[in-house]
Image 1 (tube, rainbow, N blue to C red):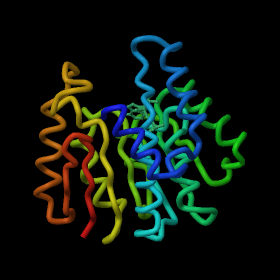
Image 2: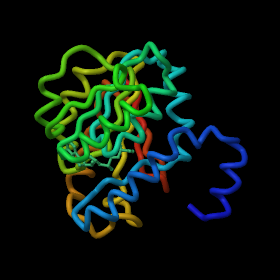
Image 3: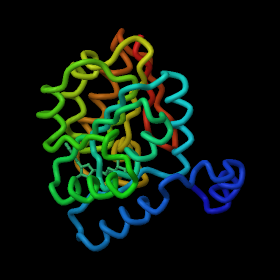
Length: 211
Ligand SMILES: C[S@@+](CC[C@H](N)C(=O)[O-])C[C@H]1O[C@@H](n2cnc3c(N)ncnc32)[C@H](O)[C@@H]1O
């Protein structure tokens, strides 16, 4: 997104995109320090108002994230949904999980955000109950295997947001492996009678509503 567009949007949002912004900065700092293999890319702060909108729409009481990182988006989602909502966030990297837990502790969010350690595909199969919002922000090569879990762990009206679709469409991540997995995931999700899915061009997220 162009810098000028970002500035206009930030003005319009008037601080609504600034929630837990320090954690966004810490995530980027960590990635630069951690080295090339680190994929702690926090979501765009301009996406923060989306969680407030979806939390209101779904009356969210349970939110699930795959790919916690430093905990930036989990904290944004927890704050957007309010004190009656619990967030479960899955993280496979122990250092990242530790950093996220420390962040939640410092913000008084530990009782509301639970870090589940392990790979998405392994942890998802152990989860029970249904979530109002699911955010997929981890290794896209696992996404096709998530589809049965998405059906099982959502209810009509739940919303699933999937990030990291860029490798298929170009721009960021265009040279990364795993394009067939993203294509297979999106094709199956779009054709799945349990979901209505919109792929957001340019942003390269998808938004699915469970029906
Ligand atoms: C893009 S970052 C997540 C950023 C976070 N959602 C945010 O916006 O602040 C990806 C994180 O997911 C973790 N991760 C990647 N693939 C994963 C997987 N398959 N299962 C669990 N964690 C994964 C990485 O270690 C990294 O911390």
